[in-house]
Length: 208
Image 1 (cartoon, helix red, strand yellow):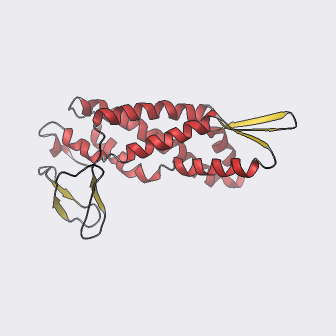
Image 2: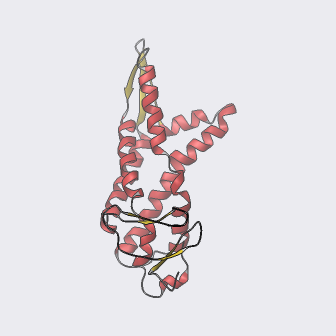
């Protein structure tokens, strides 16, 4: 499809369709296997870049500030996301800790970093150095970002512990809430459409 950007190929069954304009928030699906071909979004590249930069700031806050603070008997303890992941990685829970590290830290960090790299170039109608591998990585790690699962776990823990301990959500929790919202907004944007911002002739150099 490098030479025919007006066509789109289903990644699952290889059916070929002619790309057409979609209305706001519409989704084009394959009529053969019902897979998502591409999405429409109100967000343009400028909006997506602004959201990504905001997500980067919120991501730092979510990982540096305490997620939860527990007080009992005049003493208190608090933990950040990275400290929680480190605690999970001890002993027999090592596999759980590694999965948590990948889904809650490494994958979101890669998504934000790669988007912060390719979007400024796309805004200038240029292809970023390493654009093709960056787009491939973005496509493959997209399903592995599970910040909302962690947020749900934190909220459940706060509710359960609040009956016996003084539990206070930390700034990291609020930052995680904001990051979940931002990640959802960013995920609604079909990053494959960035291929359309390549200069003429660049399509022939590979696609994700």
